[in-house]
Length: 271
DNA sequence: CCGGACGCCTGTCGGC
DNA sequence: TGCCGACAGGCGTCCG
Image (cartoon, rainbow, N blue to C red; front, side, top):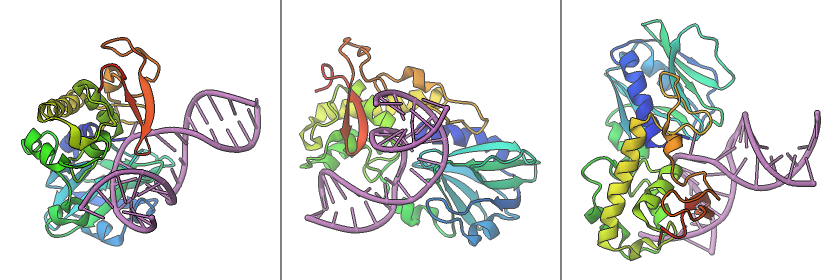
């Protein structure tokens, strides 16, 4: 589910309710997420004040004085701020009960998400250490992408979805970015001109920025921290639109599998 | 090093 | 109506 725009939407939604609050209690209903929730998360957070809500790639970072909680939403996760007494649903695995009477509730039907505790420099955590640059920062530019792409035969779609190259671009926004850039998703990344790489960088930034502005993409169940869906789905140009006319030329949108993931593109506009 | 495949889970949807 | 396979927004790990 959540790619960078959805995680960022969640961060913005929960921050006003979470930042500066103290965690009264940590309720774990299901420890078995991608990695088990451990006792050190519970002891570390209980009584701690959440100083900041940050994001690195698709991880949300709840910073306290003595450690950081890393939260990942996996494919189907969402985080919401609710009155603490709200009865939990079947997939509500974790509550951080706050001193405001609200709780931050992690829901994740498929349990591909994670909730981990990290002391020390969180940026050096094994899951964050080797990540590529943020897509909306200045570090993502054509020089960098060209250098990383040089000589490689990987399809460009898999390349931009590789978190060691650039973070935050998931399956939806990879198809959307490549459509905007006019690049065929299976083109070998080492055979993309510098000029077209510049275009691709711009398109990635534009798609992600526009989606954040719309509150992210809700396909079935994504909700932001306030429980509201995102509205970018209606702005998707190719993702999920196999057989529909290309918004630019009218050619039917094609669906293929690349890197074990569904990929959508216009065979006329993308070369 | 690189590229591709797999598996972790549950829910939903389409076809028969 | 029910069953069954395919597929779904991520990503660490393993294999050749």
